[in-house]
Image 1 (cartoon, each protein chain N blue to C red):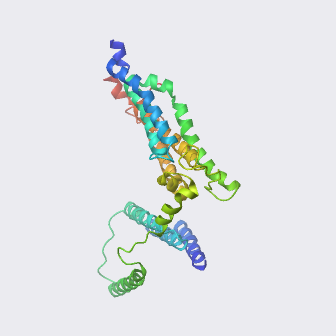
Image 2: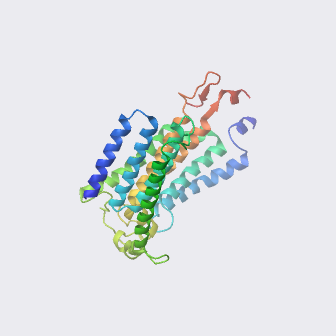
Image 3: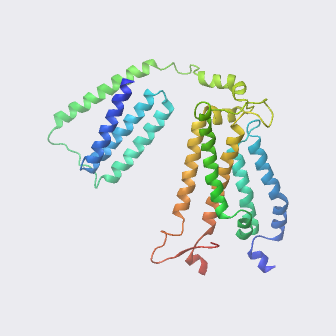
Amino acid sequence: MLELYILLIFMILGAIIAIEVKDMLSSVVAVGAVGLGLSMAFLVLKAPDLAITQLVVEILALIILIRATLKKDLPFSTSGRWLFNTLVTIGFIAVFLFAAWKCLKDIPEFGYPTMRVASTYLKEGLPKTGAANIVASIILDYRAYDTLGEATVLFTAVIGVLAIVRRIGRKKPGETVKEENE
Amino acid sequence: MSREREQGMTVIVKTITRLTVGLILLYGIYILSHGHVSPGGGFAGGVIIALSFVHLMLAYGKEVALGKLPKAATFFFESMGALLFLGIALFGFTSGYFFLNFISKGEPFRLFSAGIIPLCNIAISLKVGAGLFAIFIALVLLRFESENKE
């Protein structure tokens, strides 16, 4: 639990920095750090699939936000602190390679059957939930959180469509939008 | 005849629609209510139910379809489905945790079995069906003034 608290403190600090800092790009980077911390918190809480999703979404959002906040492309600095920059880059590459080597050593061999969870569902699905359709017993009992999230996504999509094509707020000076049969 | 043609498609399409639309609706209800014993479920059943109304709107025009299922009712059903699903999940707290299957399991392969799963299917089908039909209505009813003049 200690690492979870450290991650939480890190995320709170990152959020405060993101609010307080004046530079927009630094703020975006701080928000990205918060998101990566959240992804690691999911990992600590034993939810790896959620952590992967969070990681992917976070990186995509970070790229889009950085591209949107940059006025023009960052100048590639060749002069000045080149020795420091090179050393930092090499150091980070070494750290990441080391971490990846340590992690990849522990994962099971390729092709090794790791269907522990799935075989449990197949074995205990019918007696535990009483649903003959194993898909229904998984998506509405074991994985009902996922289904709730999907339903929320659909709800948000419907609200988004209705908000975009609604009557008020769509008018431009040149054209008028009319909803028939109101 | 010309007035009827404005209100929808030809009489052939209307006749076929009148014969089939009820069956499509019933099939959707069957799919969603048997979601826990046979392939199907809330998502598929809700889409089929929404498609029956879309079918009606395509064949008979929007007055008839919106007479059967008004816009306000669509929005009501959509929100109701979401709240119902969340409510079923929260009811698990009465005897345990979130999404607890608190109704008795019953006998497998029967219609009334599997606890909360059929109820969840009904809630999801309300949400999905009404949501899809709401999107369809919103896209159909949107008309730009320039298109009307043509």
